[in-house]
Length: 438
Ligand code: HAM
Image (tube, helix red, strand yellow):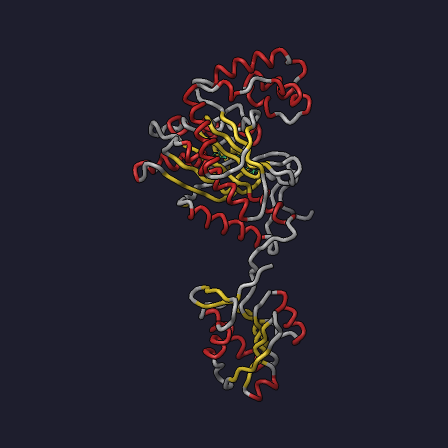
């Protein structure tokens, strides 16, 4: 029997991993521009953490968690709960009244795998803790929109408010009354949800339920004065930052901790897994998890897999090419010996250098230089050795030049000078290197 990765778990192999690294580096740079600090949490947490935050009756907690039942620990299905646990455990609210944190890593949900939906997936997650200022809600949505824009991706931002413990129960009652009248027309899941989590019926994907809820009462019309005022200010701030959005009264999110603002970035280019990123406010959650009072929070997470799929569909994507600076080609024993120490010296000087340790033919080594996206190759052949030169070749322009060296010691400085003296270059570890785009 062949051993394969588990269903819904995926290797990210060379060729694909470059896009992932690019996405991650754009994300990190953006989070820094918005003044977020990184936090890393363990993958395993007590099961209770997720039950108490995401909610006992949510799909995630009811059916999708990877739990070691005998130990009552679970592989995190999302980052917010763990991040808040860490925030509380380390008293991070003391260090800064408003904490802006981000984390990047794998999450685990036992869902039915399909395009854009995995069992191990990866999120970039940001959270702002310690303020309920509506400007922060808009700032986060603006950051999400900017993130997608930087990749040339378009997505529509849908926004809703889910109210607070004061106004939501009133809305819930009214919604229940509405659903009871149509109970027989709902799908089996929604019949069950009506009793446990009726708001979820509003975003059921079943066309029958979707049709039934079109005339359902709108939560936006049932917000208390404070929530309605907050929602208006969020929208005013979105307009001030020039972020386009549309209101979606059916968006309820699949996690129970949300209060007030919720949002999703939706794409039409991914089939049924249309949400690239999503989040919202959770003003009572810190306290609910045993943390200090009055520490409202808001955040969102973007899914790596969906972003990567969208980028792979782009024909004009710009991903920095991850190539070598130089591939050294040694032909014959003496040249290979020289090449071996030259490659090490180049690496010590901060350059990305490689050679063919198996000393194959010139043709094969040239192929390898091409495949490794080297900016230059440096050819040390037997004839060149006799003449005391090596040939430096610009792999893009195909220009060549001879560099003199004596047999025992290649003139590293001459080579380095030449390598760093190219137009269109950038600095890497203090050395100037060539930059290409694919
Ligand atoms: P979520 O909507 O469950 O929210 O997930 C956020 C994003 O993670 C989704 O929009 C999607 O891109 C990605 N995602 C979720 N499940 C999968 C999956 N099975 N396969 C691939 N990608 C997936 C949360 O997780 C909240 N913690 C977001 C948040 C942060 N709310 C406040 N702060």
